[in-house]
Length: 96
Image (cartoon, rainbow, N blue to C red; front, side, top):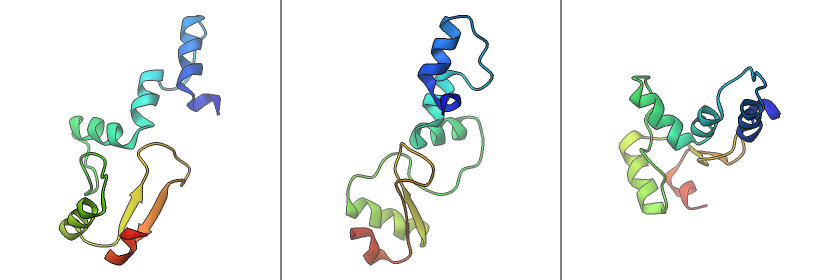
C-alpha cells in the first residue's frame, strides 16, 4: 500500500503534495518492531514484556523465556501482516 510506503510519503513531501498520514520517518521507525518498542518506551507508553533488542541464538531466547514465562510470541523485527510470527508454548519449540 502506498499509504504505508515511506518512499512515497517522502516523494509527496518533495513534490509539495499533501500526504495524509504519518511522515516517512515515523513509518520507518514504527515499521521496525525494535525501534517502535524503543520509541514507545521513551514516550512513556507501556509495552508488553519482551526483549530490548533482537535475539540471535537459542540460549538467549531460552533465558528470556524463563524470565517472562510461556507462551511467547516470536516476531521478526521487520514485516507485518502476521508474517514472521510464531507462538511458542513449550521451551522445546524454540529450537524448531
